[in-house]
Image 1 (spheres, helix red, strand yellow):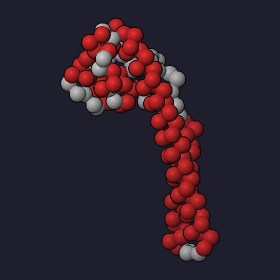
Image 2: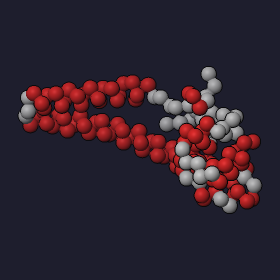
Image 3: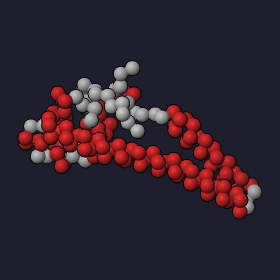
Image 4: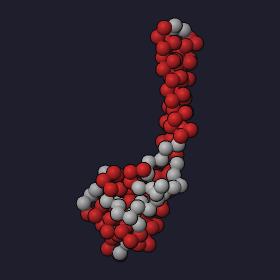
Length: 142
């Protein structure tokens, strides 16, 4: 199936359907144990369970942050190559969120989309992605 706005969200089954649920169940069980049998051991188990959940979320956020930095660089280089001179000077005005959202646009439509995003101060990621007419898949994502 071709990637589009409707299906572009990356789901990592091992992470989203195994790791997070297991950590969530463990956290719930640890809370239950502290509530019903307070002891030093159950408190330590609760702290570890909370740390595992936090570690999972931080790991995901760190990976997505690095991905966004790479996309920012990729898009800045792409815009330098594609945009007309008047718009090229405005590349620093684009936020990371705007650049990440525009990455799905084809080269043919990127200049028009970039002008609209910067002129209309569009910041909503979904709204920008919905403006893409010729969706270019990004399959190398975290």
